[in-house]
Structure formats: C-alpha cells, structure tokens
Length: 357
Image 1 (cartoon, one colour):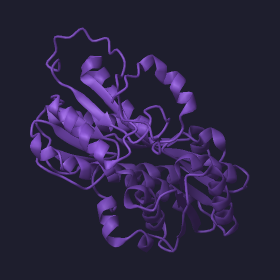
Image 2 (image 1 turned 90 degrees about the horizontal axis):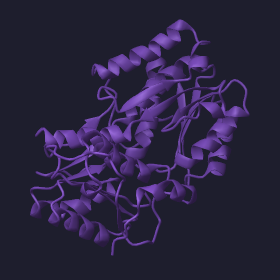
Image 3 (image 1 turned 90 degrees about the vertical axis):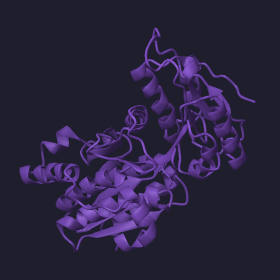
C-alpha cells in the first residue's frame, strides 16, 4: 500500500526525521510538489521515480535522492503525476516489487538512492527494456541499467593536497562511519593527495562503529593527541563532533565533508568538499533522454561539476599564495584527467588499508 505525502508537509516532516534507513514503514509514493509547468513539452509523457531506504526529508542521504528527482522536475517542467518518491524501502522483496510496479506503469526511469538497489533492479530490468534503472552507487550494469558513481575521491584528493601543505607535524587524520569502498574513497583520495605533497606524510584512518557525534569527537581528539594537525572527517552526523574537537584544539585545520562546516570552526576549517547530488540526477536523466546512456558506470566528478571544493574565503586570504595555487592546480589537473585516483571499484579490489599508514 502506498501513501501520498503532499510536498507542503515536507518542511514539517523534516523536523522530526534525521536518519536515512531503519524505518519499518511501508513503502510509499509521494508527489514532489507543483512544478508550475503548463504542459505541452516533449516530456509530457515521461515519468520518473526514486526509491529510498528511508524518509525523503532526513536532511541527508535519502533527501539527496528526493532532491534529485525534484531537480529534474523543476528543470524540465514535469507535473506531479510524472514524479514519484518511494520511501522507506528496506527489504529486497519491497524493492523488487516497487521497481516492477513502476516499470509496469510506464516509468521511463526508476532511480535507486543507494548501491543496495542495484542487485534488486537487476532482477527486474530485463523484463522491462523500455525502463531505465539507475542507482546511486553499486556495480551492477545491464542493457537498461547503470550506476551513477560520484567521484568523491577527487574532492578528497584536493583536500589532501591542501592538508599536505598546511601540516606542520606531517600527520593527518580521517574518520569514516562505514568501512566500504563507496564511503572510504574520499579518505583514500585525501591520503593520496597528502602524500603527493610529501610521501612521508602519515594519514591516520579510523572507522567509527556508527555515525555518532560523540564517538567522532573522541576519535578525533585521540588523533589530534597523536600528532594529527589536519582532519578530514567523513562520518555523516558524526562530522559535527569531529569539527567540535578541532575547534577546541589550537593549530589544527580541518575540512567539511558533504556539507558546510566552516561556521563550526571558522579559523580552522579551510573549506568544504561538496557534492551536487541533484546535479548528478539531472545528468543521468539527460543521458537517457538524449540517447547517450549505456549499460556502463557513469562517473560524475569535478569535470562534470558534481564534485567541488568550496573555500573558506576568510581563511584562504591568510594562506600563502603558493599554497592556494597548489590546491587550485590540483582541481584543474583532476578536471584535465592528469591525476589518477582509484575509484570505489578499484579500492574494492585492493582494500582500503593499503592507502593509509
């Protein structure tokens, strides 16, 4: 059974929902709001859906998926009846059933916000060749299925280059709240960027038991006490605890990851690594509509404008010109394809540990 959730309730719902996943609610299809389009476009018969493992208003990963289809709706003037958000899909059976329902109803694209949906979609996709099944992450491909791979390792690399130039101790630290390649790859990029400046640089790597702010705070405190003076936290809700630990420590720099954390330590957060998840959804949609999509992994990084580095402009103004120039050059080199940074699939083959001290 599907429940319809009007968009005007989204703001109110957001206050009470903070985590993606873990909900036992039945999958629901929610309209995304009135786009204001008057119809009559070439997209009038196009329907798209996104499947989430949690609520579309969690303020985090699941909301990125919801925002992705909303971005498509806004850019291409889709009506509410053409866009569906299927939330709180937590079992394989539900995922397969919902995917088949959408395809049978004539949806052009069914997105899955998370690599876990790739395997489920692969069991449905062959029976519905006119529907594209696209996942954010995952490794399964097919004639009408591919994953979007946001190259967050590129943003990590830029932060690592800057860290390698800022460190005084030659020791840096990073944390993650999940030890799997799609999550650890920004930290791998960070380590490689730091070592590109000086191969003797040490990058401490810690895996949290959960995305917990208190655990992140304590882990970063420990890394700092062990000599780390630049921190790259990638722990979702735990990032706030990490930045708090940095703010209480003199002579320590940090980076925001997947969000703006400058205000948490304005004299210490050098900048933020940002991901334009809605932009990735739009890019995938356009590749299908213009006939460029294929059953291959679609990599989306700095060149495509999906991954970016956002400077703390006030702190940037205090840095030596050659330090700023080196970070900017790293960005240009990545866009030009001059830097080889392993993606999540390559990291999966080698393991994460080989990149850290």
